[in-house]
Amino acid sequence: MAKAISQYFKRIFDDYQVLVMINPVDFSGIELIVHPDGKIEKTEIQADEEIFEDLEADEFQTCSPLEFQLTLAKA
Image (cartoon, rainbow, N blue to C red; front, side):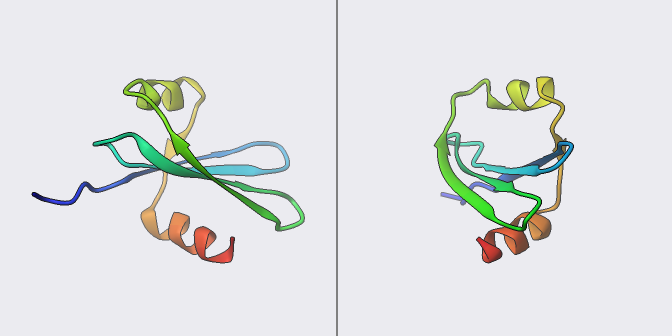
């Protein structure tokens, strides 16, 4: 069985940004919140099949896996 390729999203707010990685098979993922002082909060998430519609409604844009992984490495 082939391994699922995660999808990555990002939204920049006024003073922080949120990056999200979602596994499209089981809807598990990681959310990173990057604060203005550089602190990074990491949360493991379990979403449902509507996660992609929810992210679109919340104006998240796709982002590169490299950007997400570099931010995750700092967490």
